[in-house]
Image 1 (cartoon, rainbow, N blue to C red):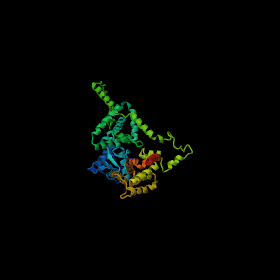
Image 2 (cartoon, rainbow, N blue to C red):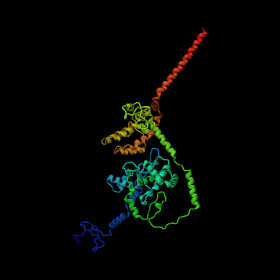
Image 3 (cartoon, helix red, strand yellow):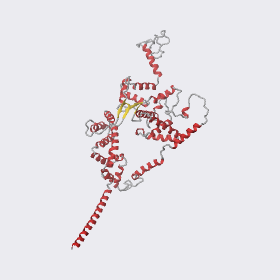
Image 4 (tube, helix red, strand yellow):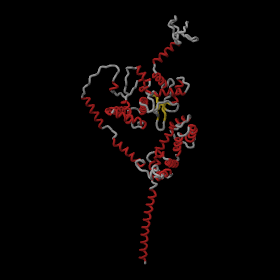
Length: 521
């Protein structure tokens, strides 16, 4: 085999000048030479050809398909019982990471988590309780996306589709479907942008809601989460990367040049009806009687459509303003005078005292957060909970709040202390958690951090807000504090009226006795 100094052909490439066309000639000594018709070479050729045919999206979808296949050892998909409901068709992040390590021969868990995050960022799998599409190696519940919403369909949804989705969410009276702050802002912005055709968008949303209501409750819950995850990919939370601008979607569009933008809800628009292939323009159709009838029906329906009146919105805003107007120092002067602009520090002394004023106690009744922000309010609420033998709830909530402020070197120790005091089996101050929150918290404790007890704290917060706080506002302890200033005045009034009554009765009795003595004499 001749070896020239100028021969720079890569290793493993056949020499066209060789007399044996069925041999692959290697330039590097010590490498086994195989005939091109060998089964191993055929398998390698087929593998690399298949890899060239498949884009990154196809490879991800193959992984997701195998992951959902129970016959080939996929990830176990199950229904989990929550506090008062069931969570259908979910898997845990730990199961996904372990499956990736086992089936893709990944040794490092960090690499498996990174691969899972890349898959989640494209929307193939998503967390059911978070808008941030990342993979966590813990008990967080995930759900697989429906193939209809996969990127292989070349989705490039328009703002009208997003407006229909947000409008549909406002029509569904469920707490899990309430709009987040950024979604409410987006809806207001879209409503201004599409003011002329907002009626059409609203009709599309109403039609979608009617169709969804006919579906089974479990199926509807799953579809709602999948649709929400789809928009988390295409209209992500502020601060998150929009993965739809990456190469995976552009590669698919290049592979399918005839595919154009599609509407998620089947809405046809001028921008969506255009095709890259030239078609002759259609003649404009004349308006018929049927078109007029449809337009009349549509206008009649709009007359009876429910609308949110500005008067109701204004009333709510005015009520909120009136509630807090006496606590706004820019509107209502402080009593006594503001110590920041005068030499009188009596206001600070009143605020520091353990005897709260009526003005201060009244604010505790506005919301649960108001009483938690006030140190004296927390103390009074804690005394009330002690009387009901449920003070461990507030003490746990305060301990978790304090944990978030601890130095990093003390966090692990403090996590263990909280666990042993409130959550461990046989804990002295055991709190009542649902199975879902307890499972997540027990997994998080293994790698403790400042936010280990986040789920448990949220559950306890809701429990106190809906139960204990309402009873506290109705209790005698709170009512006595609220009427502290009026109580002496009322007692004084009762004492004065009693004295008047006693004197009048005494005078009448004395008069009767004197009359009786005069008659007897």
